[in-house]
Image (cartoon, rainbow, N blue to C red; front, side):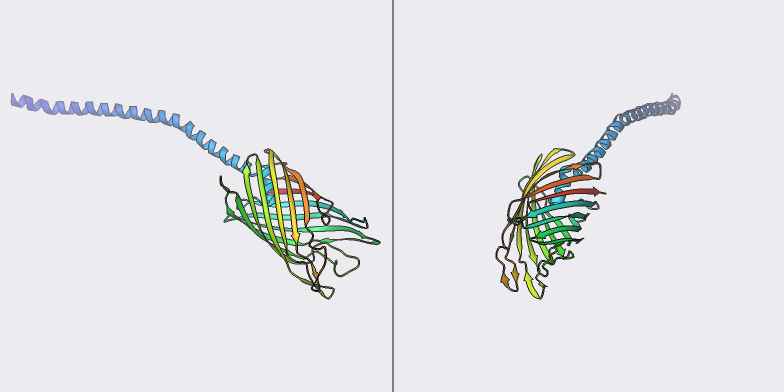
Length: 323
């Protein structure tokens, strides 16, 4: 009897093991089927999430290319992202007529501007205009052309915009007197540039109230004195204020208006101050911008002189191309 029981135990153990293996195989098969089902369900979701992420990135790029943002870059209230470059060709025309109609000046010409976004929330910008001048002062008339003053500047984002505070951008710019100027040296004056080197520091603020943006800028310019016609001429320093608003009328269009005021110190000729040279200069500008395609935009501004020493009007058309 004992031998019979002992002979049956190994057979039962083998059968039990086979049964358990079969059950485990079935469980593994069920798990594999569940995994395959989950993968089929999750994969489209992952694809959709990836697609949404790509769309979000694309929308962010499109947002940075809106007409409003393109205009704010020109205003100095927004910087290009690192690695982004922009070449701008623009054309400006200004006209000024004296109170007695004995003085008239037409100034017009193209300019080339280059901007590049740098790391550490910075941007570099350089520009060089070419000036055509038609001037009449009484019976004296001049007709001339030549390059204007070359400028180069560096901007840095000091503060990002927050709900309770505007964005702040600081900038420093150097202007070289590469443009010919004989105002203090000749009876037939030419003014393709200021005739004086200068350095400028500025602080720009920007706050969004979608679809409206309010911006402002304060600048201080120090002009270096020069010897003109054997006499020391000091134009004096100046303070500039600019306030404006921009409105996004659509993804591809925007409108803006700005008021610029510049306050001068008296010009000194041979150490003697010249009366009237400290009169403020005010200009009201109205215009807008439009994105023509993915890389090109058009910006137009009309300036209206508000003070006696400002141009009667000024028109600027710019075509910035981003790449």
